[in-house]
Image (tube, rainbow, N blue to C red):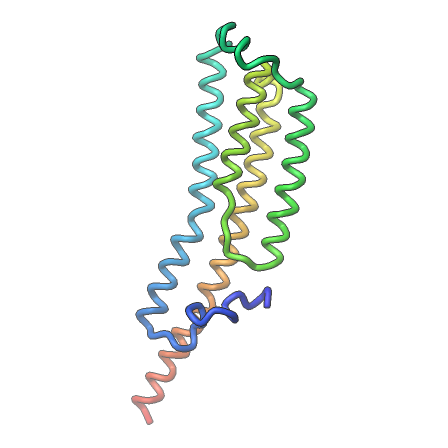
Length: 175
């Protein structure tokens, strides 16, 4: 079933669709496939904001630091980042192997922004910026590839269905 994600849902089976319905489905699949690009763009904007905050706001006021308490150590944040990367990659690859059409990149933006904030608060963002950036680009690129490949396969099936409808229409007119 993993290589035929349409097989279970009546609404997703292309056999009974008209040409117009298949064209609408193809357009919807193209929109869905672009979610990953929007996620990557969101991460680039998040990264730009993190760099700007780090450069423009060099340190939090002492009263804020006293209220929040001591920051976790840089090593603990790095361990948490490594665990997050490993877990995210396993989940993404499992979804890709299962052939699902879900895109989970939006939640990754939240987690990655938290790592930028933790490193900023620990006064270690400059040293760890590239680690968070590489992690984010890897995770979000895989999320994008997963949704793009699923949509590409679904579009291929829809186009195949359209060509079958066209052949039937031509055969009906000629015979």
